[in-house]
Length: 197
Image (cartoon, rainbow, N blue to C red; front, side, top):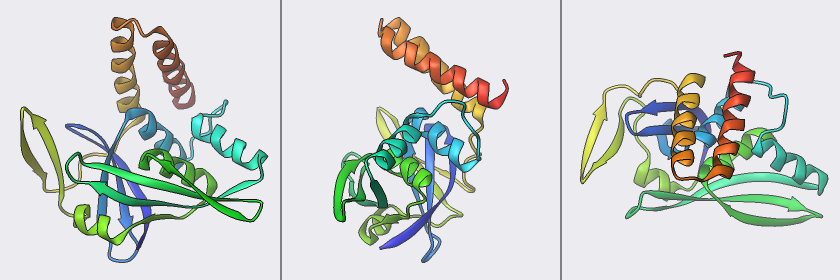
């Protein structure tokens, strides 16, 4: 098992990627994530204070109020046919250890807020971990092709997240998903308020 640190969240040609670095051998596990979770992780990594609790802050408050403590999160599986990672949040309540299935991005965002360790199973790191100097991403354009970057893609800025959320907002309005649109609008306003833009 590899204990990992969140090295960064980056923006590539095909979306946001969370980079988890092994403390054991410094390999990096790249995990593609959605813009909302990218925002949640970046807010914590960069120490941005929010006037109102974001979703993962709310989760932490619920756990604390219920007397539960996040002990660790583990990225334990990778479905290579779909490139989907699977994670588990292990938490203690009343002396009993329990676990719950989670997306890795949500698990990591919560772990960062709870100061809980993040682990990756050795088999997952062996399948998907890469040398930090060589990041590969797969683009799908009808047929799959691999695009190699000699260095990791650039760091995500708050403006990148806002632009991505605005694209999702316009799509939600076009699809007449007004509740989703309202939620996205609120996220954008919160991002602009916390970054002063």
